[in-house]
Image 1 (tube, rainbow, N blue to C red):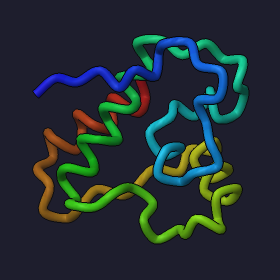
Image 2: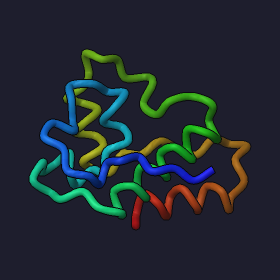
Image 3: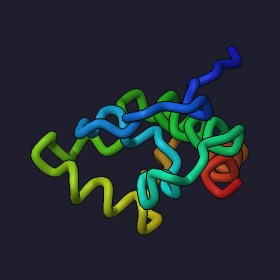
Length: 101
């Protein structure tokens, strides 16, 4: 399945105060909302989705809605979810490459 997250289109308020949304947004945009989202932004989001498929849960689930600022700061500073132990190495490399495109 190939998907388009629609993040690279212009939006006036893409990043809402919602953890469920920010975990898929490219960190450069979280840091600077004037950063123009593009195809690389969609590739980053795809990497997050690939991690989610391997884990069976949404990313950063252990952070509650009240920890929006902390989660946002962690993502901006390079925090990503750790690979799930049983995930094949090639699959891990694939989603990690998406995060570092």
